[in-house]
Length: 300
Image (cartoon, rainbow, N blue to C red; front, side):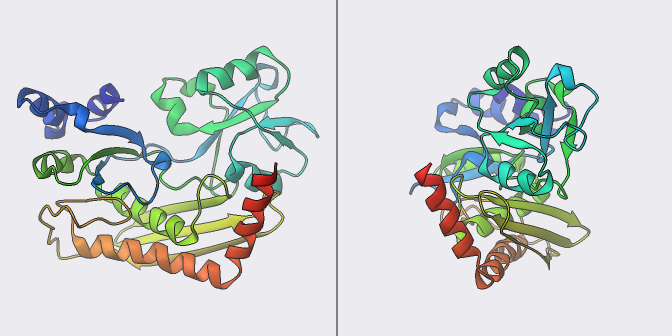
């Protein structure tokens, strides 16, 4: 992942020198941890923060077909075709969108899942994160990208985060140049939405965010396990600001993110957007849907 971070920037971009500078200065880079943002909880342990959120890869999910189904799509696969996914979020949405298909769990890392797909006839296709396939150099395996009308993505999907100690102000300042502003604002809104819903990987929660000009749009949804019951809404907010940036302050965190050198009002607006959308869904019965989904999942 460290090599990926460095290769993510143009050689003319000063940010490529951040980790080299840290190493040359004698900073122990083991004090930093690189994560997929979607794997990080919305509340980090005390003393830690997300000091940088890198520019997001394609956050959507991808269909990888069994070689015998080359040229097909989820729409054109035969009835009762089995699709592999370990994600409740994906399964719930796709069951609703593609009722002629069946869905089964598939476990393991990317290598393991692809091997299970290719070497057996248990699955007609599997669903994986497009970003993960790209980072592994396996884009050629992507048969179909699922847009938001088919399957919205997980909170933070496609973004890389760097976790640091909240009190390491020098390191916070240095890694803060790696922040991608649009990604930060989108992910703050998504994480605030998830935190307010008290969601996680044990319940089907999905999002889609987009920045258009000075407007941030957030679509959020909750689903029953079989996708038959759902709530979905969209809200927007202005993220225009006077470009006043915050100084490094270990206590300024928004859903676990310390976004130094970015305007505070835009971050506040993004966080409020996530909270407001979650509250709207909760007022319409989202808690009941998620409670039942969690209980059924725990009983499996």
